[in-house]
Amino acid sequence: MIAAIILAAGKSERMGTPKALLALRGSTFLEAGVVACEAAGLNRRVIVLSPDIDKLPDNIDLHGSTVVRNRQPASGPIGSIRLGIEAVVNHPVEAVLVWHVDRPHVSLTTLAAVIDRFRDGGVSIVVPEFRGQRGHPVLFGRAVFEELRQAPDDQGARSVVRADPSRVAFVAVDDPAILEDINTPEDYKALLGRIEEGGATLRRPDPES
Image 1 (cartoon, rainbow, N blue to C red):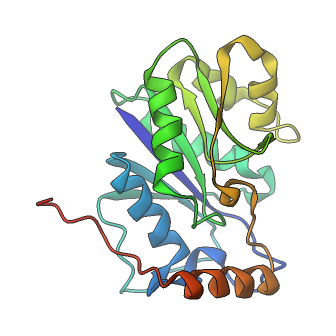
Image 2 (cartoon, rainbow, N blue to C red; image 1 turned 135 degrees about the vertical axis):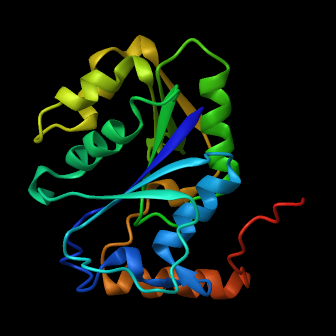
């Protein structure tokens, strides 16, 4: 089983409001991550939230996800990854896909490419690339879980990716979203404009399909 760790514990200082709760396609950034990971077959999902989000709105559907809080957000994303690993390490999980909540528009095709490459074997880490630039989400196999748990805050998961190039696969994808952080109101406005042009609507997969 491959699990998802959805990172939503950032302070969102430049946005001015929690990015996880921003509206998107009739839903929210956070729900977009849950839906995408579910559609990719990642049925065990851990959402790591900021303590700044005291209570999630009642209408947010996190369907089958485990929610934990990062009480030490100064540790950065690696602190949230550690919490996510702690939540799954005692389950039969062979890898985790780390999804950043501020990239809610990454395509399902990209997720499938990353997951399929891991399942092909021979590597412990899979990183997507767009036109030679590395992005997210990144998949980490169980073989590197302990390294992630021990990674220093100032280097984070990058130190694990760089430690041994022979265990890393880079997958080319036609998806610029893997590079795009939605960090400011201007970024958010531009994203909504692109989505409106495409006319996309977020829908949860039909369980009978």
